[in-house]
Image (cartoon, rainbow, N blue to C red; front, side, top):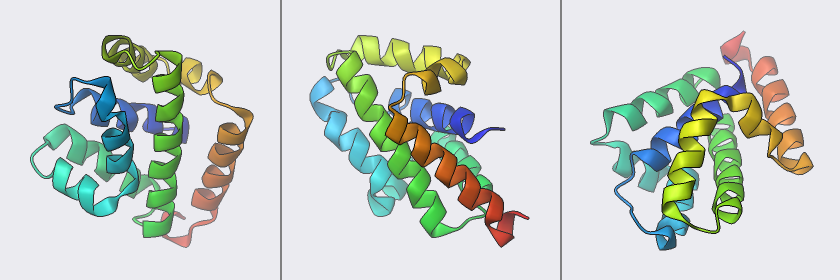
Length: 132
C-alpha cells in the first residue's frame, strides 16, 4: 500500500472517529496526530484508530522517528482540509470520506512542500533496515 493511501486512511479514521463535532476542535485533532502521548490515550478505546496506528507503525518498521514524521505530515495535510472546507465539520467529514476512497485525488490537493515531504518519507522508509 502506498504511503499516501495509508495517510489518507489513517487521517480519515482519526478524524472521522473523533468525538469532536465542532470545527474549533481542529487544533485538538492536529495535536492528536503530532503528540504520541495524547494520540495513544485517544486511541486506547478506539479499535479503528488502533488499527490505523498499527498500519503506520508497520509501514515505518516501528521506527519512532519515521512514525512521528508520518503523523506530522498527516497533521499538516489535515490543515489543508480545514482550510479548504472553511472549518465546516460536515464538509470536512465528507471530504475525508471521499479522500479515503480516492487517495490519489487526496494527494493531488497537497502543496508541493507536502508532496516533497511524502517523497522524502517514502525514501526513508524504503531505506529503513527494519522494513527491508
